[in-house]
Image 1: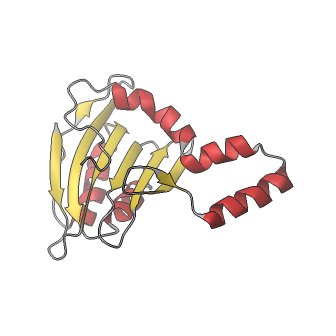
Image 2: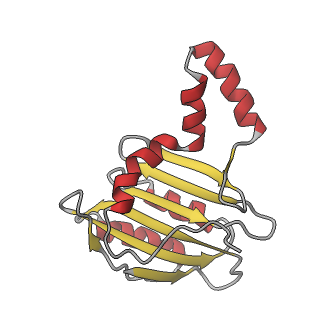
Image 3: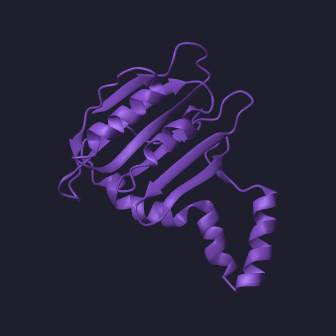
Length: 175
């Protein structure tokens, strides 16, 4: 089941989704508290079992709040290294969208998301990639995949599809 959360009173300029793909049961109350601190109020999360990781839970939270709240939500969960999650923030007036993904093995990934749902890689990151791949001998292809978040997508995909009855689907700027 999906929970709808509203950020602190004031400017509601942005919206997004928090997908907690797997969270150990013992950590769930702490993750809930960390998110409530960002939202500025208690937001009871409806947890469901994560079938591919026994002993873990999953949840989906649709949120609205001020621009930049996606980054705050992702940061609040960063302390819980065992938690697999994604946080999205839709593009809004004067602000590109963002996507954060975290796994225990890969850590945190952040991408800028364009209004049509594409991952945008800014030129300074591409220049850095070229310079570093020449120096380290890393494959340019593997580094580009990393910039696009492919390793995170690969690890999270099984957790995304394992939840039967999910009511949330990711749609990027559908007209």
